[in-house]
Image (cartoon, rainbow, N blue to C red; front, top):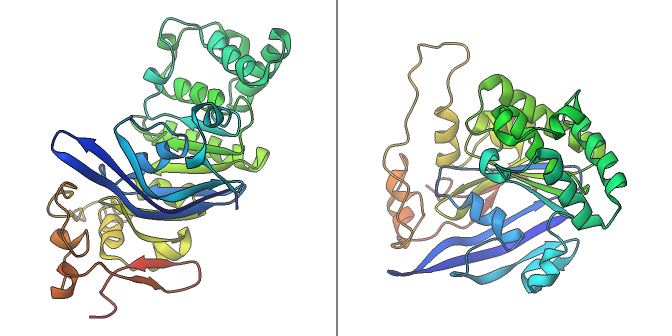
Length: 319
């Protein structure tokens, strides 16, 4: 097991008191595997990812849990120790490629700085690796691209630069936070295919943060469905997509456009994501669930398993 997040609970100190944003979250990623964490905005996806590299704000608190990377608990490392993992063993692709790149520095210089800082190699050796990395992300003219500023490149090109930046030191795990956001459909497909190539070529594991089940379907080996800071369902992608157990998972899938009949009206998920300052005693999805019962609002559902690899948290089977 490359990465194993166990029973992670995180809160933030705010002016209105402590807010619990993650509650008993668990998931795992093996080498050469793509795990997608899917859910609406505010479900805790990015917090889960950023906590792995210690990138949360100072007002965050780890209430409980472990983040085991190659059997080392990252939560027990100090600032200097966790820094040795960033960019070297674990790479990060941030959501907005324009803000992830320095706007007044040429692309090549940014890539060189990262490689040299993390490896200590000479500038000439680092430049050779940089150009090869640019080729790996489908740039036929790496020398020309390296000499450009970010604003001279399209959104898809900038995203490929960010992926190259994250992969520059061949990390074992790549965390990608919504890497296809704001890109058109054609470029989205190109970025997703590129990520699958990196897995096949370098055996890199990928933790993919997304709100789009169509993205999950196209690239993921496993999926973890989150809502309100909790994991509601997880399993191999084929299992979850073919036989979703939790009402929230089914609702997300029903909200996808119908590829066969474009006249089919999209099904909305009525209501809003809950305010995590005021958690109800029962299921976190209770207020929006179309099949809720009395017990759902009173008790937190226990873990159920439809197979050894497919689990969910719902009282529906009891009803």
